[in-house]
Image (cartoon, rainbow, N blue to C red):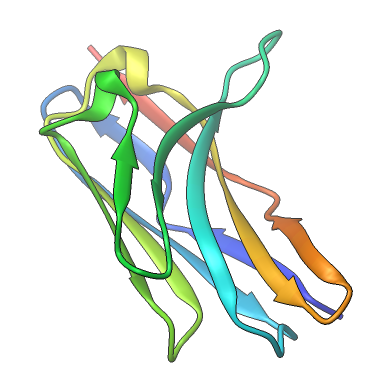
Length: 119
């Protein structure tokens, strides 16, 4: 069974750092885009950062210059280094992987990890 599992969330003071990781298991095919999203209660998940198989990155304006996304295709993992965290960065962070299956692209989503940034 294919699944994504996030780790690295927690409680941190403003100005601190966290490194999130997303590990895939049970996925046999190549992964195109890997992305990190943030979910806030009552709102739809919003893109935080993404990285293509070719290494092209895309960041939401709120995270530019503070967040760095990376990937390891051999390990099928994606990481998000978050520095200079702000209270508004609080939310559930989850990863999405777009997998190139023989039937076409399929998106897998993790359960998420809570990030809480205190004043």
